Image (cartoon, rainbow, N blue to C red; front, top):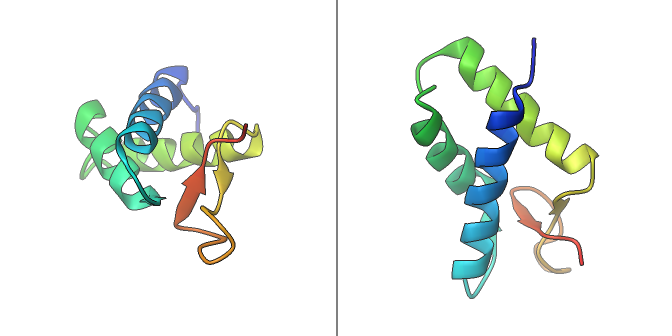
Length: 82
């Protein structure tokens, strides 16, 4: 399965926007649902799996990290590393 760079771009744009607009923790389901809608992959198993692969790649490359604080230290919460 190929992870399209465009998927990562959309995911990061949505995630960074959600983090900027929020005064508290952001959860991954919000980002994934909005990105899936923007990419029109809802209900398309291959497209949804590629979106999930792109999301995983973002964390593996350190563009986002899991957790918000020590009270919310893992999935589904995330933050942008400084």
